Image 1: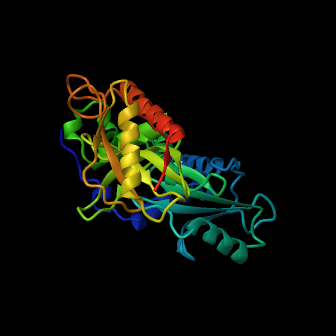
Image 2: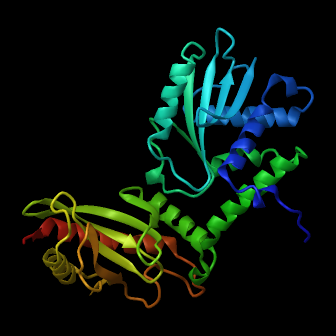
Length: 349
């Protein structure tokens, strides 16, 4: 099958995505209702969906102004702001692969309130992200709406008949990213690359739904994509330290001890106490082995964890495809072990 070049193979920066989102929203202007009805409907539906993330209804649009990179705001949409009623300002913090930092959204909201104080009835902020990101690191929903790749695709997939190359290329680009992320569901784990691991961790986070986060973990060896879950407090003579699980890759699942509020650095003597407690209490097919040299630090691996079967720590079928139900069951067993150790062990110097 012959394919044509896709604009977004080359337009990979966030500024290109800013321009695309602004372009799509611009079609919601009343001037295009008759001349380009499908694109007008697309722009209107996208605008409505963005506002709905904060449960704000889209009024009848009389005037629409869209700007990019204004006062450092990625996209600023002003609806009816030159009228007396139904005035809405929508600010969009648009991300591809990076995360929000430096309290950006709150800063931008303050800027809008100061600059346009008499021009709006409602101010809506939305964090739009097309790349993969842990739910735990997303901005709080009380601060802004969240509009992720899947939400954007839900809108775009209803408009595959526009004949507009930008719309088609953007939708194809995002759908390809979504499909690539989800390949872990049916491919051998040995074939996984970074994006499939992101998809796998996203599903763990969705199912775990508590004390779970994933992201890049930097280290001198170049770093890796890790997942942390099952945080438990464990008592010491100086307050609480923490126990948790860390997924490194297909072959390494560890239990780690964090300094918490007890110490500035984890102590090797405490690591040995945790290792002894884990080894003593381990059962139900859980195998505990010492995790290399105990060097301390803010947090450190105490034990490598494996289960009965050979191969990866997670459950797979004969084709190397993950059995997610069985994998979550394994993690739940390990969580119960951590809970038992945390409640029955008090670390001493």
